[in-house]
Amino acid sequence: MDDPFDKPPCRGCSSYLVEPYIKCAECGPSPFLLCLQCFTRGYEYKKHQSDHKYEIMTSDFPILEPGWTAQEEMALLEAVMDCGFGNWQDVAYQMRTKTKEECESHYMKNFINNPLFSSTLLSLRQMEEARTADSAIPFKRKRPPNSIHLGMVHDITAVSDISYLNCEVDSACG
Image: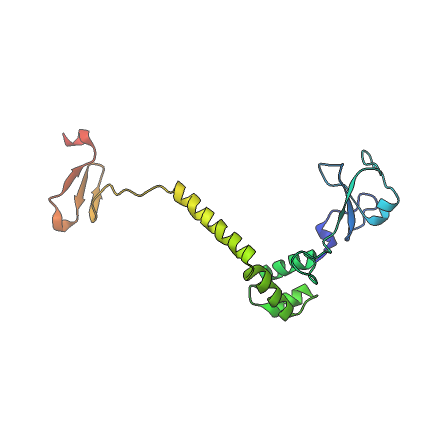
Protein backbone atom coordinates (compact mmCIF):
# COMPACT_ATOMS: atom_id res chain seq x y z
CA MET A 1 0.00 0.00 0.00
CA ASP A 2 1.76 3.23 1.13
CA ASP A 3 5.24 1.86 1.80
CA PRO A 4 7.51 4.74 2.84
CA PHE A 5 10.53 2.73 1.70
CA ASP A 6 9.29 3.09 -1.91
CA LYS A 7 10.05 6.84 -1.87
CA PRO A 8 13.22 8.80 -1.20
CA PRO A 9 13.36 10.51 2.21
CA CYS A 10 12.43 14.13 2.90
CA ARG A 11 15.23 16.47 1.77
CA GLY A 12 14.73 18.57 4.91
CA CYS A 13 14.69 16.16 7.84
CA SER A 14 15.48 12.79 6.14
CA SER A 15 12.32 11.19 7.53
CA TYR A 16 10.45 8.68 5.39
CA LEU A 17 7.74 10.36 3.35
CA VAL A 18 4.11 9.46 3.90
CA GLU A 19 1.27 10.84 1.85
CA PRO A 20 0.53 13.59 1.37
CA TYR A 21 3.97 15.10 0.77
CA ILE A 22 5.31 17.94 -1.39
CA LYS A 23 7.26 17.82 -4.65
CA CYS A 24 8.92 21.00 -5.89
CA ALA A 25 7.74 21.72 -9.44
CA GLU A 26 10.80 23.85 -10.26
CA CYS A 27 13.75 21.85 -8.88
CA GLY A 28 15.13 18.93 -10.79
CA PRO A 29 15.97 16.79 -12.63
CA SER A 30 15.84 14.58 -9.51
CA PRO A 31 12.66 15.27 -7.53
CA PHE A 32 12.98 17.58 -4.53
CA LEU A 33 10.56 16.07 -1.98
CA LEU A 34 9.56 17.47 1.40
CA CYS A 35 7.39 16.23 4.22
CA LEU A 36 4.55 18.54 5.26
CA GLN A 37 6.40 19.70 8.38
CA CYS A 38 9.50 20.86 6.44
CA PHE A 39 7.30 22.45 3.77
CA THR A 40 5.29 24.46 6.33
CA ARG A 41 8.56 25.66 7.95
CA GLY A 42 9.66 26.99 4.54
CA TYR A 43 12.67 24.69 4.19
CA GLU A 44 15.21 25.93 1.62
CA TYR A 45 18.33 24.14 0.39
CA LYS A 46 20.82 25.14 -2.31
CA LYS A 47 18.69 26.15 -5.34
CA HIS A 48 15.37 25.20 -3.73
CA GLN A 49 13.45 28.23 -2.47
CA SER A 50 10.32 28.24 -0.35
CA ASP A 51 8.44 30.32 -2.96
CA HIS A 52 8.84 27.71 -5.73
CA LYS A 53 5.75 26.20 -7.30
CA TYR A 54 4.91 22.80 -5.83
CA GLU A 55 2.74 19.71 -6.24
CA ILE A 56 0.92 17.86 -3.48
CA MET A 57 1.68 14.17 -3.89
CA THR A 58 -1.12 11.85 -2.81
CA SER A 59 -3.07 8.88 -4.10
CA ASP A 60 -5.91 9.22 -1.60
CA PHE A 61 -8.65 10.01 -4.13
CA PRO A 62 -11.10 7.90 -6.13
CA ILE A 63 -10.38 7.02 -9.78
CA LEU A 64 -12.90 4.46 -11.00
CA GLU A 65 -15.61 4.58 -8.34
CA PRO A 66 -16.25 6.10 -4.91
CA GLY A 67 -15.01 4.02 -2.02
CA TRP A 68 -11.85 2.91 -3.85
CA THR A 69 -8.85 5.23 -3.72
CA ALA A 70 -6.11 5.33 -6.34
CA GLN A 71 -3.86 3.77 -3.73
CA GLU A 72 -6.30 0.86 -3.29
CA GLU A 73 -6.63 0.44 -7.08
CA MET A 74 -2.86 0.05 -7.34
CA ALA A 75 -2.82 -2.32 -4.37
CA LEU A 76 -5.60 -4.44 -5.94
CA LEU A 77 -3.74 -4.78 -9.25
CA GLU A 78 -0.54 -5.63 -7.42
CA ALA A 79 -2.32 -8.21 -5.24
CA VAL A 80 -3.92 -9.90 -8.28
CA MET A 81 -0.50 -10.08 -9.93
CA ASP A 82 1.06 -11.51 -6.75
CA CYS A 83 -1.72 -13.92 -5.79
CA GLY A 84 -3.16 -14.79 -9.19
CA PHE A 85 -6.53 -14.09 -10.77
CA GLY A 86 -9.35 -15.71 -8.83
CA ASN A 87 -7.52 -16.07 -5.51
CA TRP A 88 -9.74 -13.44 -3.94
CA GLN A 89 -9.19 -14.53 -0.34
CA ASP A 90 -5.42 -14.04 -0.72
CA VAL A 91 -5.94 -10.80 -2.65
CA ALA A 92 -8.15 -9.42 0.14
CA TYR A 93 -5.63 -10.52 2.77
CA GLN A 94 -2.86 -8.64 0.94
CA MET A 95 -5.11 -5.58 0.43
CA ARG A 96 -6.16 -5.47 4.12
CA THR A 97 -8.82 -2.80 3.46
CA LYS A 98 -11.35 -4.79 1.39
CA THR A 99 -13.17 -8.13 1.62
CA LYS A 100 -12.70 -10.90 -0.94
CA GLU A 101 -16.19 -10.14 -2.32
CA GLU A 102 -15.35 -6.45 -2.70
CA CYS A 103 -12.06 -7.26 -4.44
CA GLU A 104 -13.64 -9.72 -6.87
CA SER A 105 -16.64 -7.53 -7.65
CA HIS A 106 -14.53 -4.40 -8.17
CA TYR A 107 -11.92 -6.17 -10.29
CA MET A 108 -14.49 -7.90 -12.50
CA LYS A 109 -16.56 -4.72 -12.94
CA ASN A 110 -13.70 -2.33 -13.61
CA PHE A 111 -10.96 -4.41 -15.22
CA ILE A 112 -12.60 -7.44 -16.88
CA ASN A 113 -16.16 -6.44 -17.83
CA ASN A 114 -15.45 -2.74 -18.42
CA PRO A 115 -16.10 -1.96 -22.12
CA LEU A 116 -13.54 0.85 -22.02
CA PHE A 117 -10.74 -1.51 -20.98
CA SER A 118 -11.86 -4.43 -23.13
CA SER A 119 -12.11 -2.27 -26.27
CA THR A 120 -8.69 -0.79 -25.49
CA LEU A 121 -7.22 -4.28 -25.11
CA LEU A 122 -8.91 -5.40 -28.35
CA SER A 123 -7.58 -2.41 -30.30
CA LEU A 124 -4.08 -2.97 -28.84
CA ARG A 125 -4.25 -6.63 -29.93
CA GLN A 126 -5.42 -5.63 -33.43
CA MET A 127 -2.65 -3.02 -33.73
CA GLU A 128 -0.06 -5.61 -32.68
CA GLU A 129 -1.41 -8.15 -35.19
CA ALA A 130 -1.35 -5.52 -37.96
CA ARG A 131 2.18 -4.51 -37.03
CA THR A 132 3.49 -8.06 -37.08
CA ALA A 133 1.61 -8.83 -40.32
CA ASP A 134 3.27 -5.85 -42.03
CA SER A 135 6.73 -6.84 -40.87
CA ALA A 136 6.36 -10.59 -41.46
CA ILE A 137 8.62 -12.07 -44.13
CA PRO A 138 6.78 -14.59 -46.31
CA PHE A 139 8.29 -18.06 -46.41
CA LYS A 140 9.27 -19.25 -49.89
CA ARG A 141 10.22 -22.89 -50.34
CA LYS A 142 13.34 -23.35 -52.47
CA ARG A 143 13.15 -27.14 -52.77
CA PRO A 144 10.21 -29.32 -53.57
CA PRO A 145 8.66 -31.14 -50.60
CA ASN A 146 10.41 -34.33 -49.46
CA SER A 147 13.78 -33.23 -50.89
CA ILE A 148 17.05 -34.09 -49.23
CA HIS A 149 19.92 -31.60 -49.36
CA LEU A 150 23.27 -33.25 -50.07
CA GLY A 151 26.24 -30.92 -49.80
CA MET A 152 26.11 -27.63 -51.69
CA VAL A 153 25.76 -29.02 -55.20
CA HIS A 154 22.62 -31.12 -55.61
CA ASP A 155 19.16 -31.48 -54.14
CA ILE A 156 17.78 -34.98 -54.56
CA THR A 157 14.17 -35.77 -53.78
CA ALA A 158 13.21 -38.64 -51.53
CA VAL A 159 14.53 -42.04 -52.50
CA SER A 160 11.21 -42.94 -54.18
CA ASP A 161 11.85 -40.26 -56.86
CA ILE A 162 15.60 -40.14 -57.34
CA SER A 163 15.27 -38.83 -60.89
CA TYR A 164 14.79 -35.21 -59.67
CA LEU A 165 18.09 -33.34 -59.79
CA ASN A 166 18.45 -29.61 -59.24
CA CYS A 167 21.78 -27.83 -59.54
CA GLU A 168 22.13 -25.09 -56.93
CA VAL A 169 25.55 -23.85 -57.95
CA ASP A 170 25.78 -23.21 -61.72
CA SER A 171 29.57 -23.47 -61.86
CA ALA A 172 29.51 -26.93 -60.27
CA CYS A 173 27.06 -28.23 -62.93
CA GLY A 174 29.07 -27.58 -65.87
